[in-house]
Length: 146
Image (cartoon, rainbow, N blue to C red; front, side, top):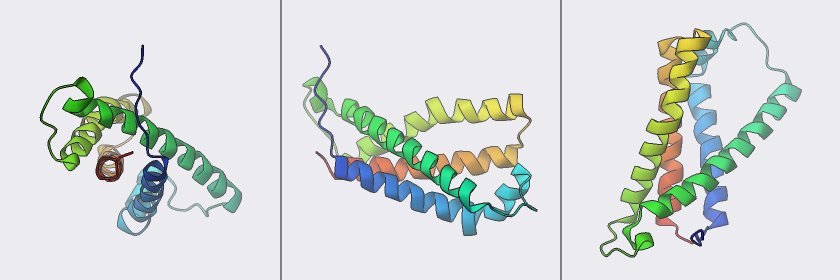
């Protein structure tokens, strides 16, 4: 039988919003020009219809990430295993985010370097974004329990 995992859907939605804001900043004023150059987009004009479609897909992906991270975060807490000694909430958010990043995001990004001939510069831009985004979502979910 699966455990009942309490979810705070408002915290999940705030995590999605945080991810969108971080993405806007990361791929806009912070690394936008470098990222566009590495992707081969530096001379392309953005198409509004394509941008809206991409934003919609990103929001769905962000929701799935926050939803699954909420489950992962719950599993990190000793109390979910009936063990004593829950530590500070931020710690579980950090663990869930870091190990999700390390075990799922980094291998996919390494695959893009190995098989899609993406640059290491692009790898580090994308890996940094994913780590910051997951950390933010993890902290929101950890300190705002269900």
